[in-house]
Length: 504
Ligand code: PNW
Image (cartoon, rainbow, N blue to C red; front, side, top):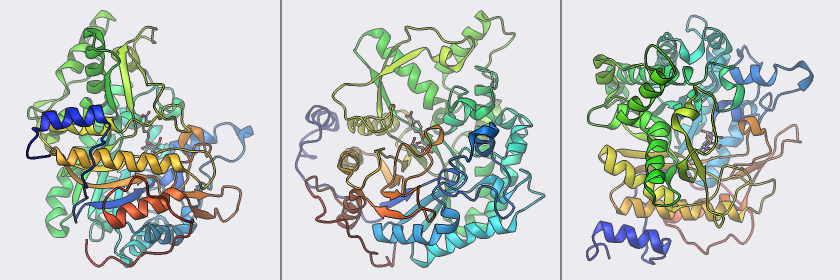
């Protein structure tokens, strides 16, 4: 098949047939399987052992009548980390992606005050993982800024670059010997778009703060990358990347405006971060720079709301990643906006509406439907525009209601991993895949109503008991066989630990 058909024809065949070609495709030895989580979403212990407050603690505690916040206890991984590692052993994974809570290790935000019990918690977790030959993959920042830094303007303050660098240094000094996979920032667009997560960025200036944040995050990422490269990489031999949300976007019909809308959407949502790091010329995408400059002028601003990157910035950022952490969940269909948006705002700058197809399976989250071909297309888009970057799928996942019989999640995993195998066959350099999420957790504004876990968490039990869902067994089987058997379902829900892997 591969020999006879050119890549283009194969892709077309794949796109129309919905991957119905029957040849067996396998994940190569060395491709890493894992699961993912993030500190605020699972840890709990929000005010224990000297932890400071994050913007999420503050957000959910802003109203004194509101009662406890979803993240106060969450899945209580702070006390259950041994069970978490046991679950990873049950799945038979190679890697666990988790994040470190900045206020847990630096309660005052700055690195002058370190919280030893917080640092010790991550030592314990890392050591427990390594004991069973599971590689830790650490996300340095996954949305939970220390509140004291938010009071200084958070990511809009240019000094945030230094705050982050100093925080990262504390982590490298402590853990770089043991941790070989690092991710600086999770989904910069989620952090920076002021519309996201409502109050997350504390009612900041729409259409202005978004771009200040984007620039500072990119610089924080790049400075940290360079620091790691210079001071830790040779000594410890690890790698470091950044996780970017790349959902596929394509025109709802092939009209010129809809095609243009797809490009605008992609460039604003992820080109903003991909282009400076992975393109040959570096810098923000031209489309984004031109569009924001034009709108800013029309709106009476003295200069573009998107601050430019200097030649030195561009140089610093270009090439500042060993791999591209790809967070991919779904596909959106684009057309120019019909309604109006606040002016100025990021949404107004983009001015694109998105829809989905009725026939795509709906998850338990309004924004999330299954369209696996989108992962294939997103991978090919990255190959074409950024010259075949090394990719690590750091998130891909599905939400359900409570319950252990989650055939929709099993199907989602099977279909998306199949799409990934096709992308690999067409040239994508994929290093690994960490499923979102190991267990049910706090889905930000949605609390615990949207369940993303391979393991169910009983949020009514004080122990936060974890139980394997059907999809955990399906995923375990894929990892064991290194291939996707679409019709395979487990006979029962019994799961026991796999043998300790001796080499990775
Ligand atoms: C990610 N979208 O966010 C985050 O990294 C996780 O913390 C989160 O729990 C997970 O995905 C599930 O939501 C996303 O609209 C938020 O396409 C929104 C989208 C994608 C990912």
